[in-house]
Image (tube, rainbow, N blue to C red; front, side):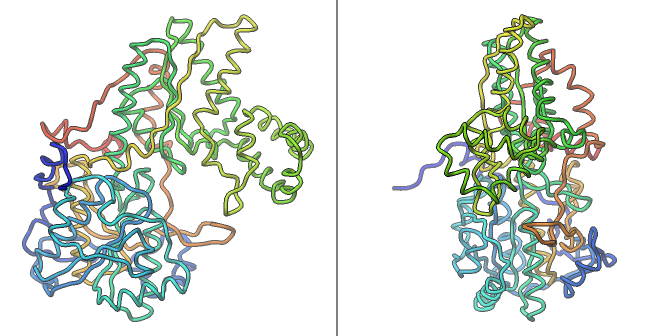
Length: 550
């Protein structure tokens, strides 16, 4: 039985993504700039990457026929969480290779980096590629979260790449995956393996960006998908006029998604993790802030509202973080004893004798189910904060405070909360026109970097707030973006995550308006992603990007 596809997928299959002028030209050349240095820790990183450190920034320009037109064999792998547009990276890579020489071949490693280590792959022909053009998901070759770090894994990758005779390998992933690409590129060059390694910046969290990389792909589509849902909820809130909706959004390490959705939809309350950390805001102060707005809206006859919170908020709350650190120490020492206690109340009683007074107060303020979660540890020995449903935690604490205020006669607010988590709903959406064009250009440009013999680079496309005719493509040496950070107790090279800039234009616009949005209904209803129609409706980038480049 033939697989059926939707009417939209049929229409989108014929969409031809737009390319920057240099990539549309029949000939492309690589223009190299001056040598570069790492973001920080220059001497240490230079020692770790002696064969690839200091490489120049590369720019792609209309060329002179200097790039190789020999048939190439290239591999591609999708690493980490899904992001809209991954299939178009592969399509752009495939089309560019075939345009340079129809005899070139592309191979997809299956289920992420583990496919490179194990030598699991399939050839990607036009029959395969054409079924996935402009579609969401990573299901063409699937993804995985393996890392190529151990000496035996690096050696296995080298053996498989040499056995396949690959001229290039494209690793599509976030900051960790692009760092991994740099490690592999360094290893292969040190071993005289000719395979070039190129990274592609992907993450819906939006935290892989810097002066060279303006945005990671997938962020545009995911934020627009979530904003549609939030707009629908806001419409429902003003229709039913009796519910408070607490919405948790993707973003453990950074709040870019939450900030972008706030700019697109104007909810009543938005919590930004980076601001909470910078101001030292306590959990109790966050609850008081929410309660104050709920009570004031109720006094104005509005027993409804919408709150946005990033999933990683609790990791940024100073007193919560101190409590977690203390709990980790206690669990490391007394976990067996705690497990031997017959019930939860006795465990709490024991913890109150071990925690500092401040941390005990925070722990005792939490609902019992979350207290229980915090007494477990994951496979790395860490308290599993990802299991804390932040929106439910806030609902419980706000409900308790409002009940207390009502008992004291301080408010008549009716607080009927509903919780939502928008996560996987945005990771595999059909890419917006922006992401469809951007990812296709990234893949097309990656092919040119491989044709130019470059390795240890992350491909970039810049000037993306302008029409595609003004986009510029090139490559950034991964070592240029590296710094040293402590991971699992030791200093390792990583690409620094970009957090929300509290001095940046996007946050400032939000901060200037949030008090007005809190008490009044300034909701915006973005509606679904539009693929066909005027450019201002279909092709606009995120508000974050537009404000940053304004």
